[in-house]
Amino acid sequence: MLEVVAALCGMQAQVMSSVGLAMCARIEGLTPADVRDALWKRRRLVKTWAMRGTLHVLHADDYVRWQRALGAYAHHTKPGWFQRCGLAPQELDVIVAAIGRALGRRLLTRDQLADAVARVVGTSELGDILRQGWGWMLKPAAFHGQLCFGPSMGANVRFARPDVWLRRAPRPESRGGWIDLTRRFLAAYGPATRVDYSRWSGAPLAHVDETLRSLGAAVTEISLAGAKAWVLTKDVAELVAAEPSGAVRLLPAFDQYVIAASPHVHNLLSGGHRKDIFRPQGWISPVLMVDGRIDGVWSYQRNGRRLSVKIRPFVRMTRQVWDAAEGEAQRLAKFLDGELDLVRE
Image (cartoon, rainbow, N blue to C red; front, top):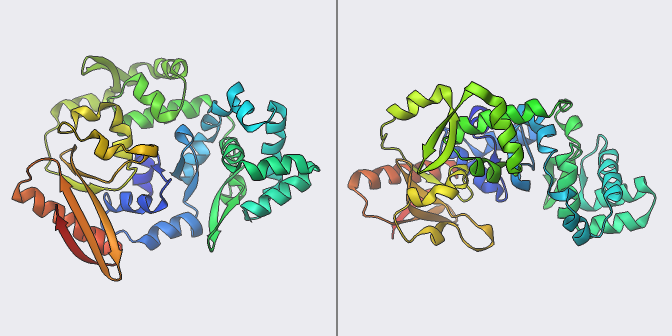
């Protein structure tokens, strides 16, 4: 499980249940308890805001390795951001530092953290700003290594300070972090264009170009549908020799494969179905993947012990693919401890 999360450069976690389902699609014999234990007991996984300013679950070692790189995420340093949230740059610095001091060695809910920050800064004004715009304040604190998620208390989310929660301090050097992150991204998602990597990481194109140049002979430039793209040099021969494997997977909402493939999804889809996958408000549907192609969507609904899984293909499916998809649905039902009711739409 840890190796998979690391190889994918983390898993997007707006919908936390999708993290376990994404792991289930890739790992035999996994249970939800394995995921919970790695996050909240063994602390080998960590939930935080990361690439693109979105929630992710990362391997704890990668958090330590990448935190300073992710701290360079610049969205919250732009004038428009300060104007929208009503803060001056120096006030943001004060709040970020105060969040780390307020957390200390404690796990705090949102309300508890707001009260504690107000006490640290000694004014109710900044505390009020913090209460009104949690998304505004928590992300910068996470980017700068002052906040990550701890285990919830009932329905209440709780936060921790990463160096205390993970029992280790972030590394102080950021350039090496970006080079490592770029190499790892290309290992998982290459070939990729500079725009692909910029969109995935949230880094400006100029920074992407500099990092790619820094990799030197470790990367090779190729043509991807007429565009310049990069791949790790050591992977070129394997990519050229790759053959279809017959793999069939039920990938959940916000799966890393679909997110990374989104700029080139027209090459992976039968026509006319993009809107079925990339939906309003940034929702990314669960997909049926056949040999790397997106050949349908699926959904599930629970009613007691019964787990109804509906698969809607975009193309005519062979008996072999249906059988494989049913096998994946059975694995899903086992992971969720339910009795499968498969519906073919």
